[in-house]
Length: 62
Image (cartoon, rainbow, N blue to C red; front, side, top):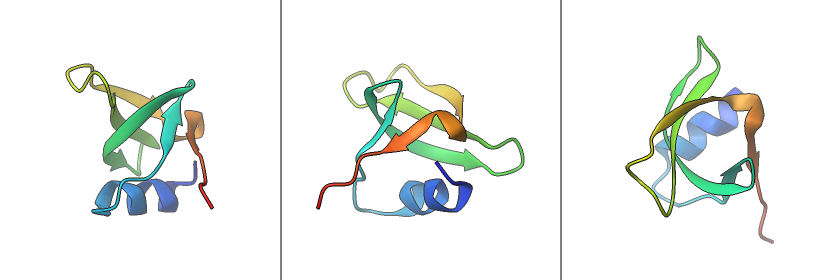
């Protein structure tokens, strides 16, 4: 996922369909310098982790 888009998603009140390794996640914060995002699986909010932005995928619903 591009840095700019990940930041937009993290700051938006509208939930986007983003996944990490096939698991739907919520983006809490984007570290633009390190190109990482702080995320957690939607069904396990206690499992926060930092992941590279390149590993995040947005599933477009249109």
